[in-house]
Image 1 (cartoon, rainbow, N blue to C red):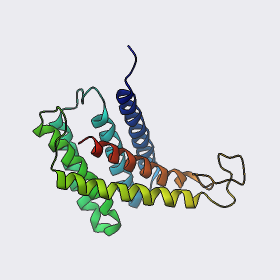
Image 2 (image 1 turned 60 degrees about the vertical axis):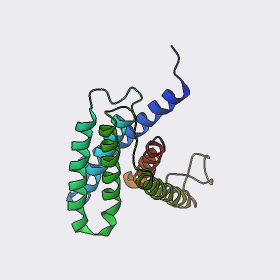
Image 3 (image 1 turned 60 degrees about the horizontal axis):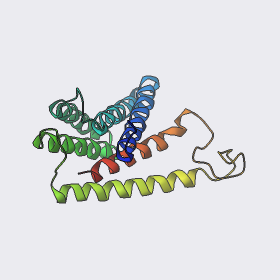
Image 4 (image 1 turned 135 degrees about the horizontal axis):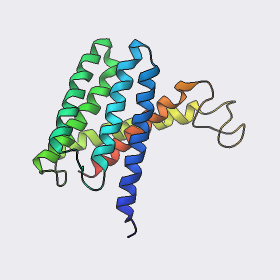
Length: 184
């Protein structure tokens, strides 16, 4: 039986989020102490978003389990705020995932019906985040780096080291969050 376009889109979102989560998990493993917490938080978000985006519902991951996981991620993000306001995005992301899990719990796992004002505010936040992140990523790709065009062209990944994929990974997860919020 062939996939419908919506199921295919959902599975592509699952793949995008799972790959982003795996990359963040590897980053957390290699990172020094100050970077380990944010990378681990991003890994939890990536894998959680993958589980939540699965088109067959959430399988073995019930809404209550997701609510507990993202509630814990929210506490972790609050703890990270001690390091500065630049960690606020992790808090917004954790709260957004907690909100979506709570909406699923209220809907008994079937569908997501949130509060329009909260969903709208999160949509605006993530639309701005994705647009700004995409613009920064494209701007960073200019110059002398060798890109997908074969040389001299614009590239989405700047040559230089293993940290180059971090902005792309964050952009992918922001895009995934935006897509999931659009389904509410």
